[in-house]
Length: 168
Image (cartoon, rainbow, N blue to C red; front, side, top):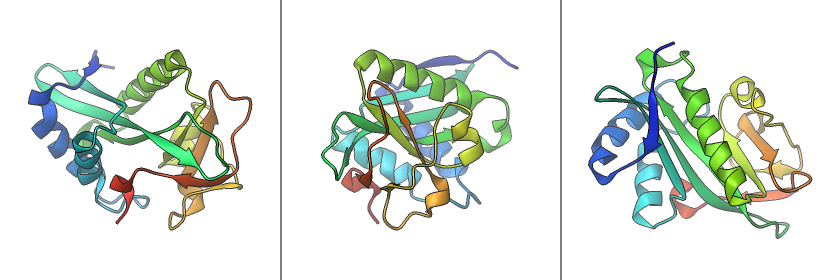
């Protein structure tokens, strides 16, 4: 596998992140084709807790956004990882894994209780994410919703309260 640099986004990276994110989700069954807009809205409302990119030379080949979520049972200090974007021509090369690992490491260092994600279940489960029937995101097919407890002992039950950027 090629060597990539993973770093936090800078303001000059925003157009490249937008383009990458728009291209990354074409034909994905869990996508509503709004991921680039979601990242922009999170950034514009200061709800983008973490934003890492994978770069190869001058090219942005991967990006991950992390934002806070609430859980209807009152559980606090949980986050959403995603969208996780990888350039379509680079998917399958481990880029998504590298940026997700970086985000999880940062979240553990912050003492985050846990994380939720929407996406390819097989990919997410490689990192310990699991299907939690009592944890739901209304309107999203549950087969794509996964959670991972970090500092918390267990995954909570209830409705995931995503930032309004994720609303239609």
